[in-house]
Amino acid sequence: MGILYIVSTPIGNMEDMTQRAIEILSRVDFILTEDTRHSGRLLKKLLINKPLISFHEHNEVFKISEVTSKLKEGHNLALISDAGTPTLSDPGFKLVRECIKENIKVTPIPGASSILSALVASGLPTDSFVFLGYVPKKDGKKKLFYEKILKQLTEFKITVIFFESPHRLNRTLEDLESNFPQRFLSIARELTKINEEITYGSVKEVADKFKNRKVKGEITLVLH
Image (tube, rainbow, N blue to C red; front, top):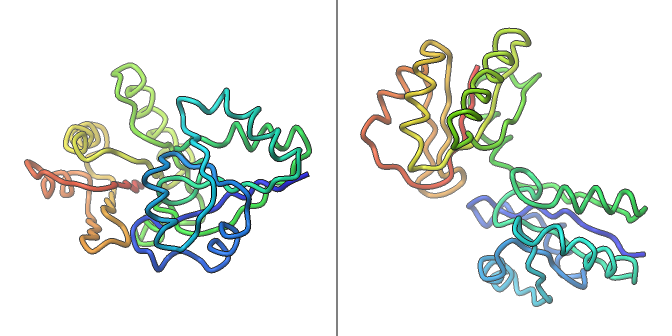
């Protein structure tokens, strides 16, 4: 029986790739990846040449049986995402769940995570936090999303972390300003990259700073 390794990759800075992760990727028989072209460039820089298996949200369900078959045959596989820790707002948890069900060993190889990086740089309480993924696009689900945030903030006093895309950031900041104008907010953008930017203040203050700005890159919001 093979092993499924959950391998974290850099979220920007290549020096955040751990030596253990490099060694595992060099040893496995196959690497599962969201985008074979993107991961191919990373592996080329690391001088790793392994067969890649496309594994993303659109083919995850029917690829699981193929992957578990390879593991049962004794092959070792690594799951990586385009950036950061796999399965966090990325495909993969269903595969992990199936491996557990089939008594296939799953081993995490820790590394970069925009969620934890944004949290520890936010100055907000870290003893209890919740990650809610991306802000939903549809109005009905978005309303429930903000209700869930309100419950975490008021009833449980928990720090809330979530993602947003650059082109929707201003709209989301408007929504946050309507719902939580005086709450403290940290926005981490382009973490570990040259243009890394972390902005702090009340929701209203941060919304004003980003108003009419066109931003790029990965964005993580931390609210308390």
